Length: 116
Image 1 (cartoon, rainbow, N blue to C red):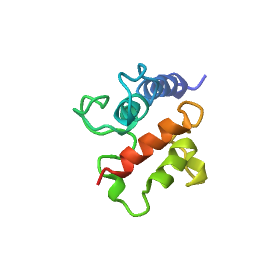
Image 2: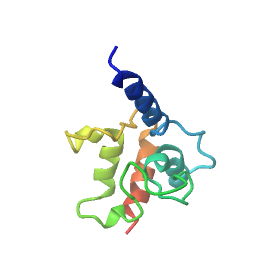
Image 3: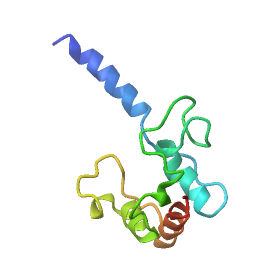
Image 4: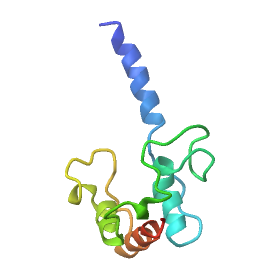
């Protein structure tokens, strides 16, 4: 067996453990609770609720996402529901259409679109 395989397996396990995974159910209701539950693990910055202890996260900072050109509530809702519907090459962003209701997705998208 090649000597690099055990090291590769350990590295892959560490990356998987640090990845974007499930968090406890949202506390409270509303888009901010949805963000903390579904998004913060990958998008929050260090020191923000749900974010890493140090540094940045895997996903882009969403604190001003609504200020970016084209980031309307409709675009964001489609992207949250199924990222490939808006960006066919999307790889890291998971689809949340099966995890959130249409109303929850819309509420979250409107909340994010208002972040300017």
